[in-house]
Image 1: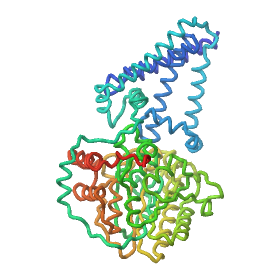
Image 2 (image 1 turned 90 degrees about the horizontal axis):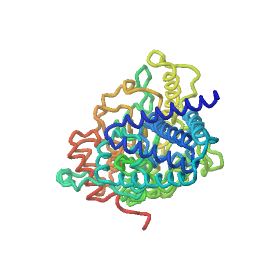
Image 3 (image 1 turned 180 degrees about the vertical axis):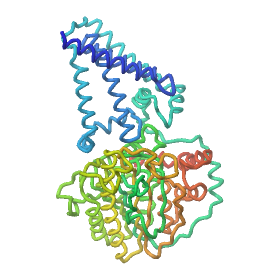
Image 4 (image 1 turned 30 degrees about the vertical axis):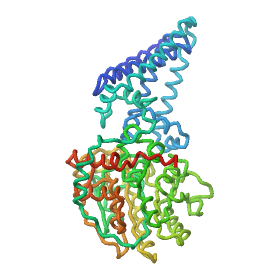
Length: 553
């Protein structure tokens, strides 16, 4: 009897909490409508399966609770609201190593599995309704799916949902709007109402930069979770990789935090913001990549470059190999294929290969492909990614500024950044020893998740947690571009910086990037929002950059 009371108590709690989540809708009342539809769907689905009212109520309450908590986890770890198509990423077993990387996520998933077990099996001995009632439950569940689909495809609902961007606080509405026909899984290019004339007029007033036939080698190094740690509150000394003379350097707005590296990869290779793809922004390597017309690798290939990606993950991870091919990468190289130190002899995820080892591996790429110069080598390092759990004690006086958990994480993070700095400066020395003009650029894809707040980042910009640096070294024959760390740039504009440094004349797409840099210096942080809309319309509506389906060619 006592066991039954405990079960009833848990069910009551889950039901009450799930109702609070549903009725505490944000931004639009459609959030309430979709929440109730989803609750009713799970209720009648379980009723059809079991024929037990209490079991169905318990199951629906738990599912709604879990969906809300998954959204909270997504916001905490990735600063991104949950969409239905994110489950395609979560259910891909190749991404499950995050469970070992973050004990918090492992414990949360473990707890959710227990809840699901309780939701599925609790009250299984209760009296069952007859089949006629159960069949009615199936018909109601089907009707709810149809109602959900109809609502999600209604213009008034779509407009209401669009108005919730970018906050997207209507958790259950976000799920309904990103599943089925309304999910935009059928690809749709971003569009900005053909408002490109304003930008086009300004573009025609911008003079071109000088080009040449220099064709330097280019290495573009994505450094996982990296920002100059001296920007964090405290007394951390600036690592050497951020000191000295640069051909160009800037702080950039990026569009992810703590993970989802592929968003920044997409941005720096294509010159497009992943956020323009809205609910599919987390799946751009799957859904947007085949439609990209212009990219940095493609324009370099047109100039005779051989383009290579050096990645410590297998090509199947987040569809990277296929996406790189869509972007114009000639060859995908895993460190094991070059017998690099720390890589072993199998193609697998090398989560702990050091940045110094990856730098040495990039040198092997130069040796192997020296006959194919000029080269574009795009490389990633992963050792700086969370979790930051390797520190046994707090160092660098961080206990003066942070609570113990954050101080320990930042201690670990900073030590890894010092190792990365050594790897970066060593690789720059290698580039200086080569017999060809070169450009060596490195940048952070996002900041690491250490539980810090915006007040812990000493940058005078909005949303400082989604800002990283972009640094460019080069041979003496590379002319510098004036830059100012007091002005904020954007990662999507950096390909045009590299082309200008390389003295390669831009095509119409990258000329637009160059012009936007000259006119405003950034995109998301540009104060002239009409210009921003017109600029995006020029890329998507006029140039139709993301409209072309390259898979069918």
